[in-house]
Image (cartoon, rainbow, N blue to C red; front, side):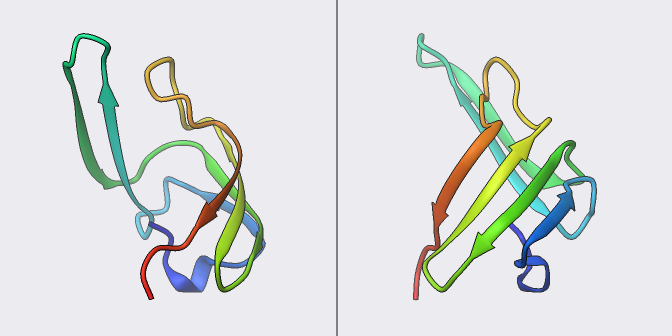
Length: 79
């Protein structure tokens, strides 16, 4: 989760303890696990943001079981 004051174009280091994350891995045999916390690794660059979504570039975050690195458009949830 990115706090509202950081929701603007620019680079965010995920080691910033204001950034919260949740990571979950589901394996083909129905096993897996997950966790949440803060002080993750990698970066998120906010390219643009409006009232409905945010466009980001995620780098250095994923691994073979959690392939999230790349460019993403993420819709906001809720009202």
